[in-house]
Length: 249
Image 1 (tube, rainbow, N blue to C red):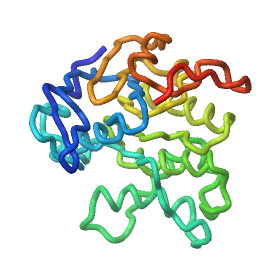
Image 2 (tube, one colour):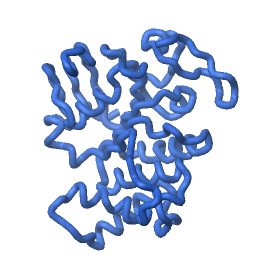
Image 3 (spheres, one colour):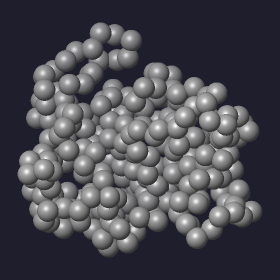
């Protein structure tokens, strides 16, 4: 395991006067595949945005790659939970992925040869190269999500952060996404928010329960006790069988 790439100490954050995160302290090592789990409103997405420098903490210490998040955002690929794209808009998969290069270098307006080579590499890695000329609206939900992950990877980031990457994706599509993320994790640290514990338990290396406070576990095993602590309304039974709700929230 490599050195810490995320270091958070005594982090507090409030919104409109209401506490969202309280005294959060944890580290993420290089090469980790960390899942952030917890109830809706527990602060998972907020924590992710703080790590990206999209929000500013009330107090506490955040270092990513040893610096403040805003100074290293170019080293991080990000896939937000809600990506609003008009599916009827005539834009190709290749164009969507290339947008990641423009975002990382706002001074450029045209795509270079290197941009296109990086896009090809990212799309091949996510298994969507064959769809490069198709319209984004013609793809399935799982295929679209892999395109958005490819867009995040087109800058060759050292870390990938994803917020609910398999939301609204069927079971087959979820499995495909996590298989690709497993390959990505061989060279990139991965941090993601998820509720699907049965799916992620086969891929992650560590887990953090986020419910205002944080409970970090350096192993991939997800137990019922952990879910109770985190107050997660999640499925711990295999896909295709009735869900078992451990605790309401």
